[in-house]
Structures are given as C-alpha cells and as structure tokens.
Image (tube, rainbow, N blue to C red; front, top):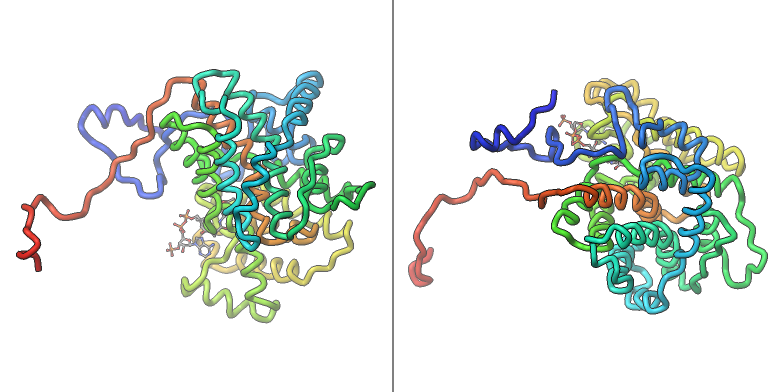
Length: 400
Ligand code: ACO
C-alpha cells in the first residue's frame, strides 16, 4: 500500500525514515524492481532479456527515450554518440594535476564535474535540446574519461577513441592499446562480456547514487555536477565500491580452508560479506544470475581456472545454506560476480567502480532528464532533532 504524504503534511505530520526504507520521493517510468520476486525491468523489458539480446547503447536509448530504438533510431543514436567520444584537449590537461597513484574514482569525480566548464550549454538546464545533447555527451565521453584515468595511472599515453569499434570495444581499446598497436584487435568474447556488464549496471531506480543525482538536480544544478555527485556516492563500499571490496575480501580470505573462520567473523559482525545483501532484493538479484552465467562463459572461453572463483563459490554455497544468511535474506548481488569477470579480462581492481560509474551514467542522466521533463520540488528532507533545547548565550569567561 502507498500512502500519499500530502495528507500528512496538511495535518502537520512528517515521517522519520532513516535510510529512506519506506519513502519514495519520486514517480518514475524508467525502471521497475520487485524485490520479492527478484524482478528488474527497464522500460518494461526484463534485465536478463536485455543483457542477452540488446547492446548496451540500445539499452541507453530505451532508458533515455522510453523504448528500444528501431533500426533508424538506433543508427542515428549510435552516430550521435560516436560523434562526441573525444574530450576537449584542455580537459586532458586536468589529469596531469593528479598524482599518478590517485584512485581513478577520485579522478573521475573531478574530470566529470569539470565537463561543465567545457560544455556550457549544460549549464542552461531549461532548454530541452541542451539537456538532450548533454545526455549524449555524457554517455559518449564516460568511456574516454574512464580509460584516461587508467592510462594516467599507468604513465601511458592516452588513446584517442576509435569510432569504428563498438562502444565496449572502443573502451577496451582505449584501456589496453598503445600507440604502437596499429592493428589492435579486441577479443570478441571480452567485448561481449564488457557490453553485458555495462547493461547489467545501466540503471537501478532510486539507489543511493541515483537519488544523489536527483537531489543535486532538484536544485537546478547543472547535469555534469549532478553526475559527479552520483560518482562520489557510488564510490562507497556499501554501493558501487562493493565490486572492488569483493576482490579485496577474496584476497584477504586467501584459500577455501579459511572460509569457515571468515564466516564466523561475519556472524560476529566484525566484517560484512561483500557482494551479499541488497536493500530491495530479498530473494535473489536477477543481475547476479546473468552475471554468474557470463562469468562462467568468460572464464571458459579464456581458459582461466581462477582459484578465486572456487573461493567465491564456496562462500556462496555456505551463505546459501547458513541460517544467519537465510534469516536475513542475504544473497549474492551483482557485484559478487562482476569483479571476478573484470579481473579475468585484465581490468585492475581500482577500475572496477569506475566501470560501474561509466555504465550507470546512462541511468543517472535518464533520471535527471525525467525529473526535468515535469515540474519538480527541491529535495529537502526534514530531520529528527536530538540536540540541546533553547539556552542563552554564555560569555567566554563564564563557560566551563
Ligand atoms: N554481510 C553480513 N551481514 C549482512 C550483510 C552482509 N553483506 N548485509 C546485511 N547484513 C546483515 C546486517 O548486519 C543486519 O543484521 P542484523 O539485523 O542482525 O543487525 C541485516 O543483515 C540487515 O542488514 P541492513 O544493513 O539493515 O540491510 P540494508 O538493506 O540496510 O543494507 C546493503 C543493504 C548496504 C547492500 C548491505 O547488505 C551491505 O552492506 N552489503 C555488502 C556491500 C555490498 O555488497 N553492496 C552492494 C550492493 S548492490 C549495489 O550497490 C550494486
């Protein structure tokens, strides 16, 4: 049942809901989740069907425009995205201001926010055309900026985007090719897995980072600044940072023999089992199922026999049988498997959350556009004040 808060407001009430567990601040037509059934739909289409049959950019189009594109719309959209993949030369200089060992997410927060200093039409949020071109620019430039943040950390030259490659191939090319690789070929298995990872992360309704983008946007702030705020929110280990944290956890556990001892630590609440649990999914995360299948496909195709996978499977098996996890409805989420695939295809751990942000940018900007398509209020939650009651000022010589 849904209660409309306006009646409460008129009666002088407000609700106390830490973590927004029962509060919906928006209406949206983009993504539907049924946590009990483990269902995730984008514009009505089930995530497993999209991940298996559609290209990520088609999913982006659906998130932005309400439905999957027909052939003509697809060609036009891909052409527009391809036209905007390069970044302004001055923006390249921003990278040099960072230390080489900076976390690439720290760089992303800075350089994506800095896009507003280059593409000024983004500052005029009242014009629909300006808002649309901003969405295209963002989706087009995220892979370029993400790959640049990696190249910078490696001390290698940046690679210009290649628009004869598809979206995922181009990202992998900018990540791994060097100027000496004149005839660089992208492994199609890896490119397909990458594209699927993008799709599985494209949107997830009002999660912490999307809510951050909406809240920042509700002030009329420019979209690049809003997306930078979303990237900052995503970085935390309870959210997008979990994929990096899963791999760190597997490293820490080391071998299968250490799993029972680690699980005891989890139950003593000394550590969390990273990649497990979700605020909304209480039976299974449908993205995790597709991710697991993709993980198997990639490891088999690349002939990788990763002991980390065995370790991950052991954790999963114990967690699914143990009453502690069953009672709390804790199941593997999308990030449990994505890290294993990303590692298998040679992506360094520090880039995991960057890749999540690259993919989620489509969802963030779709929500930002949806918000701007109708009148909206500034997001302004209330608080439950627990501080001092009114008291008179005390001169410094009389203070204790
Ligand atoms: N490991 C062990 N125990 C857990 C875990 C976990 N991963 N997650 C929740 N619990 C326990 C809590 O300790 C709590 O137990 P208690 O009732 O005995 O105190 C109970 O399960 C309920 O947990 P909450 O924190 O209330 O659940 P919430 O919905 O607030 O948290 C969250 C969801 C943040 C995702 C949490 O499960 C978590 O931190 N998971 C690990 C991090 C992670 O994988 N994040 C990725 C989420 S998916 C994404 O962003 C793409």
